[in-house]
Each structure stands twice: as structure tokens, then as C-alpha cells.
Length: 65
Image (cartoon, rainbow, N blue to C red; front, side):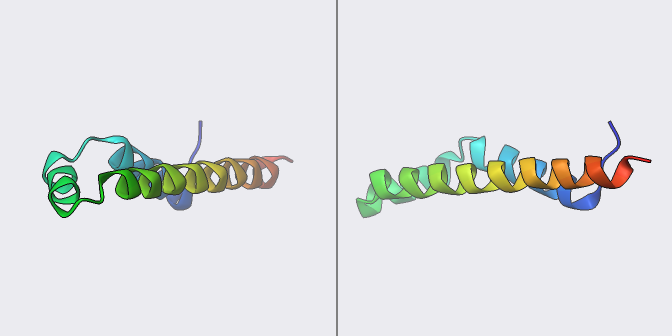
């Protein structure tokens, strides 16, 4: 599949958010905000997934003859 910079950036950000970053999660646990932190991560993933789908649809439409 052909790609563009916006799609690549969104896919990379989603990969980063889905990767367990233990030092950050330990800080959240230490500060007592682990549930809130995880909720934010989940919300961001959802928003970025929606944006990625929209960008892919827009890209497909641009590629049609």
C-alpha cells in the first residue's frame, strides 16, 4: 500500500502508545494516577485510530483516477 507522511506519523504514534513504557507507568503508579494515566492513553489511542482511518480514506480517494 502506498503511504503518506500523515499516515506514517499516526501509525508510529499508535505503536509508541501501545508499547508498554515501564518507567512512565512506574511514575504514574508512584504518583497515584495509574488509572487516570491508562484512561488517557486509551482515549488517545481511540482518537488517533479514528484519525488514521480518516486519513487512509482520504488518501484512497485522492489516489482514485
